[in-house]
Image 1 (cartoon, rainbow, N blue to C red):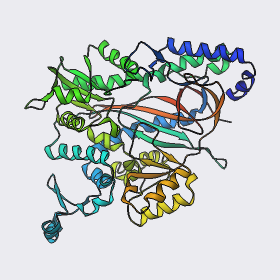
Image 2 (image 1 turned 45 degrees about the vertical axis):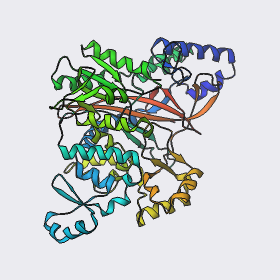
Image 3 (image 1 turned 135 degrees about the vertical axis):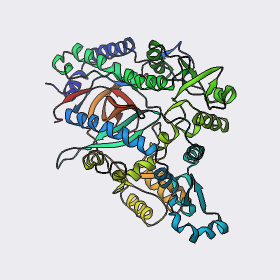
Image 4 (image 1 turned 45 degrees about the horizontal axis):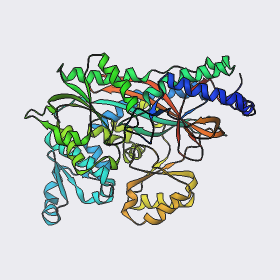
Length: 509
């Protein structure tokens, strides 16, 4: 069987044949739903293009895919447990040190003198360490955490939550032994790329056949992510118990580049006779309301489920947006995700989970589960103020090429690499602002050749690395399912994402 790289070297010598295949791929992508609005007119569907994708699929070991699928349900359970563990989230993000009530009388005078004691749900915490933790230097995470604390203090109105999570991985290439699956990050809000990743295997199979690679086309696997994700939202709506209530998609305030992809999920829900509306933060702030029983209404419609397709970046929020987020979190509506699940996906939580003994907290007496999850971790290091954080800074400055510096952000394009790590840490090494980041070992992925298709971009063979995203869905207390996977490819020297399919191989040579 010919490898993609071998075929690329041949076809690049025949521009006419290559251009014909490229046109065929783009037209097939349109035909099967890989479609998005253009940046010039992001609020209109009159002019559209295709989401960037690769001309050919790339190889991926079958064992790696099976491993990622096998551990997904464990990750779903882990995220859900974290979201319901206020002590853990307090310790991870705020540094609150729990104090036993037996010792409370001995230290009560401290609270009277310097107000460093915090009462929370009849539990006392020492707040003196919180100045050394993430929320003290990251306003965005602090605002999310403040909402979380208020919900905890008031008591949960709605115990049911829907989780639509995506765990991203790369294969860490090693010359001296097996190349393991390693986790890049956990995404717990607005996990994207669902429908378009479903349609690409059809495109890639067709292109392989058109190029005469019939045997290779048999190894491209179908994916069907969208129905499973919609099933979780539909179950949340069903459990809410009001037939006339709606699912609210919380969407972007201005440019809605991805609106056409959302429409696929909306149609799937409408086909189940579940009404869907789209609203923005400002709509919720101006026209949303809570009744005395905490039912949430907007424009006269009761909301059963709030599905956040927006709200994962600081620039998504104004002061009014934060008020709207709090209103929805306080409501009886089922959230996807709820505020605890959103916080469970922060980089600081990811780093804390890698510490010895932490996973055992969530999976006591389940050593095999702990082993499966921990096997996917790379080295993750704190930048908190103190000796441990100082050691991390020294290690990163000594060999910045070995690491990735990650802020508490979702949405891609925020990570810092190479010499830029040195620039940031030299500036922040003695400042509490360094706590807004974590340090992660840099994964050394396989480099493969492919041709990347992007509007107005030249055709050329590029060095690419592949990322495997496994999607999981759950409804708290009801069911956990793992879905299929989506595949993305990044140009080796910068973080532009292109969607792709995989040729599933027994090994990669």
